[in-house]
Image 1 (tube, one colour):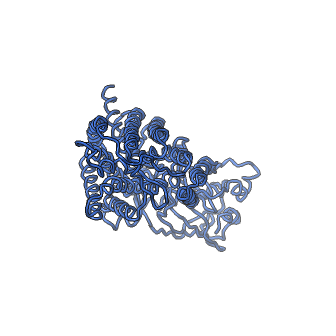
Image 2 (image 1 turned 30 degrees about the vertical axis):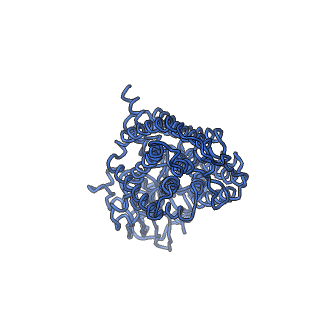
Image 3 (image 1 turned 135 degrees about the horizontal axis):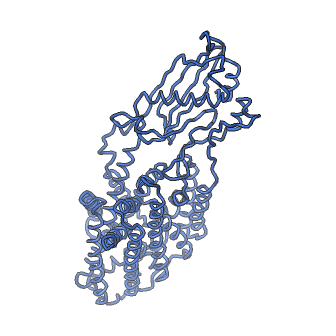
Length: 613
């Protein structure tokens, strides 16, 4: 019991620090600057609650998992269809974090050779992230983060007890405010923080590792949320104190006409050194650096984990061409983040320009993921990706215009659009393919084509179910003139290498053809039939390989026929509709007793017609 509690405490520190990226750390200053203590609490409380709810939600998912399932396998199933969204989320988060520390700490110091200095700073941040990420990994990171959090506590105590030695500056203490309505900020903040953790690879990786270690996810995230809230409360109260000492006068007017103050504490300590006694400035700067590097090392580990899993399961031809070490390395992404941050600094952007993505663009994906996972539904390739992308972009534009032009109504509308539309998309009733029913009513079974008409359904592109992990495959159904047989490949289908043995594809097609015949000709009786169906030729072209436990769908339909021969075509695809192979086969018909070739029987023509292209 004590061991579990101590693990929850260690993991709690890692959860708190991995969530203290540039957004929470520096926007706490801005929101407090604009709206005082009310702004600080309205920012910090939803942020901490959203983090805890993610932990409670993933604990619930892990608890309801079936025997043999892990939280990791469940996550991989759910996240496979939006893998690029998770990666893009991490890209924005890391770019934002590098940007925030560089702009609001090092640029605010106004040292000589600023361009060269900022470049060196960014390179140093990347190097530290790489070193810490490689040194500790997800299994040990909770211990390094516990050490760093202890340092933060010491620094915080020193800063808080020393700050009172600074005399108020002889400056105008009336902090300039921007005219944005409080609710225009608060609603996007709440939406962003309640949904944000669900697309954060860093948080998913932590929850998965806790589940592996049999550590309470809920308990760990409760500790993490409290420790994270303490960081925000400390930084926000430090902001209130700084404003009382005239730091509000350091607020800058941005390119959009809005006043920004994320760096005002840094400027208070650095530009008026006579008022900052002892080690106080360095203690504050160290506080900021620790909060940031403990996010960057977490990001490095999480991106590496995601890329390794993605390349392992992916079947893209590029994976066999490019070096695996390059495909699974987080370094290219981090370099892209660094370049993005430096460009943003050069054009004088602010933190909020990155933040808007989390209140708009990512919300649709996050809410669909939340509803699907907690509601025991499965995200598949059925997702209307173009529609979701369009909704996300529209909400991003509306919120951006509302922010820049100080129109709270537009800002709120841009935030609520993805909330409402994603809720509708995730909860709308989907058509589940019906199981093949051989016991047709008397009037339907009397004619093969009538039976087909009663079972034909709208286009369905995935064979997974709404029950996570079970996949409840609809093994036989009709889809756009294709007869489809869906199943899961198992060990008996594979060879010593681990991929599916090449001969199995032909056997799968053969089995599907038998089921197709049984479906088309339910009254066919081998003992009474006057004809037999023989294979004249068979060909198959391989495209991609399949592996054990992949969901396979074999599709068959009638390509064409003449008086004597019928040609069937087949496709073999995975659950993402990626082509594994395709081919054709030619059929001929003979008498049962003499094996003399005959014309295609009329009942076969009637049965094949609904499946003819």
